[in-house]
Image (cartoon, rainbow, N blue to C red; front, top):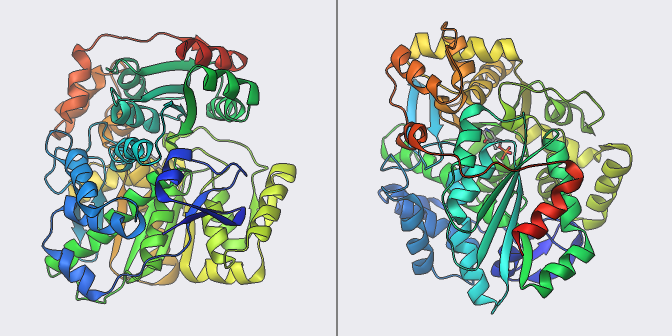
Length: 495
Ligand SMILES: *Cc1c(COP(=O)(O)O)cnc(C)c1O
């Protein structure tokens, strides 16, 4: 299986090259040239397998220059008991007769980013070997909170790699900041940026496209790559858990082979829901893909009208990982829905960067409404949903998960479709203690990691052990930069 670019369908590179590069030189996203198909026999063979085996078998369909045995080794390292606090890695929790929650936050940093970022560094290390690369790769990350920590945790002390993370100075939760500035590892660096997430992101993009910096770094033996969800090595491990969830439902007799299920996903950069779309395209029996946004509802409008328009106010919300107005991975969906028409995708992306807006073709609009449903949940709705789930089901969910739960309910109300639905839970409630405490009727007393105890006292829910351990850890990093100073931070880091 080869990979091509959403902006150049004549390119052909191997999977390992795609993982190593992260982004195509033409600015497009690297995408498999065909979507492998799975059948009932394949699903049946995975029914009684553990998560690690499921991951190796699904990923081997796409990563044809890696062996299944190699991938199983990676999966065992990624999802084993020293990393994940649940033997199923991504367990399903039944909420009611036809509603299930897919818990994706049992990894080391308590957010779903671990599902991919425990795997990506191993895929990337192997890719360096497979391509005979002798330079050290430096991963640059701009994060709104969860990706940065999960990427550092995945890359810490991985040979031939370094990682530098930039986060918006006042834009992450206290727990998220504590997680990042206490990170272990000789090859990691962290820097706060004076500005918001878009500023940090723009700074990283500028460094990537700066030829002079590339040249200087190459002379020092480095090249740059990305651990953001534009990297195919981030999307593929996420395809696994949708297939795995279906296998769990089959195994437990909750559905029969061939029954359709809906997935509802809290969405920011469109990576997680894109993985669900690929699972559907592979032949998994999936009905609707429900795309849940917070007040930054650019995707809701897009899925309803076919017009993507980022010219609107940016809202800072209690679900910060979804505060985003440009969802990069939408480009892979457009490429697929247009019949791999790279010229059409280039036009949309050119319009987006020029006017901040584009309108898709009638064909794509039709496909979007058939396969997706978009909705959003505001701040009051998020709090209300957390409170209600806690009270009615004894289930404590985080702010992002609450957005998904609310939008799933809106979908059912609006359409009457009561198909069994799995909504994704993307973070532990302990990452957003202050908002969760307020939602369950308890004013936060203090700030930062002290609130872990308060939320535990109030609810009795176990604090994830790595978050509990933050209290004893000392700060290792205390670097702040202006937006314009980010280049120098990187050049100092890679001296
Ligand atoms: C990253 C993140 C999301 C959004 O996922 P995308 O792949 O960017 O759409 C949702 N919830 C949480 C907790 C996240 O960290």
